[in-house]
Amino acid sequence: MVISIDEAWRTLASEQQKPRQFQKEFVLPFVALCAVLTFIGDLFDTHANRIVLGMVHALFCAISLLGGFWISRFICQKTTAHYYNIQLDDVQTDKIVGYSFAVVMALNGALSLFPGLFFLSFLVLYVIYMLWMAAATIVGMDEENRGKFLIINSLSIIGSQLVIQKLLDILIPNV
Image (cartoon, rainbow, N blue to C red; front, side, top):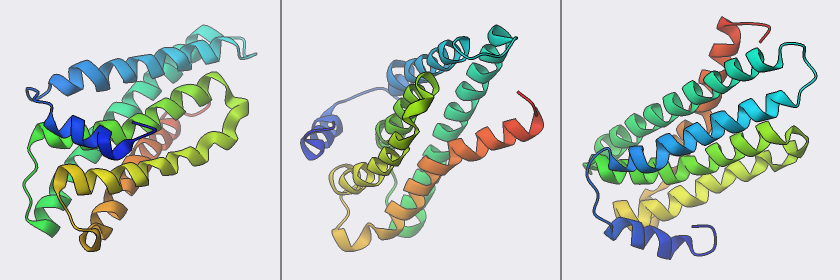
């Protein structure tokens, strides 16, 4: 997916899957891995209640990633239907959002384990390129028509998880 994204999207578009199979086999394990990495990262912290804080942060991580995935999935289906009159099925939407969201999940897991590598956060912009190629390969959009799709969906994939995380931090402060 990193080296030849165009070929990877074509391969993914041709794969036949049942609805929700992608979520069970890719999204949920990836979210669980991020939560575990967040817990492990908090175990190396110097707070007195490392285990408790690690569990809370892992739970926050899982909630924000799953919520971000579902919000982004909903927005992707609605933008393609509203702006382009293209009805994506659940499997196509899961693939577009799930694989693009994998960048956010991987960075979240890596940065929770190694917070000193914060400068890698800019790699989240790779989501934009992934969506650009997915719009061409899976959705079948021309280059001229990808603008709104790209802006709305990249903002939802990058921002929805962050907004949910901030809301959780506001609801339960000092964690």
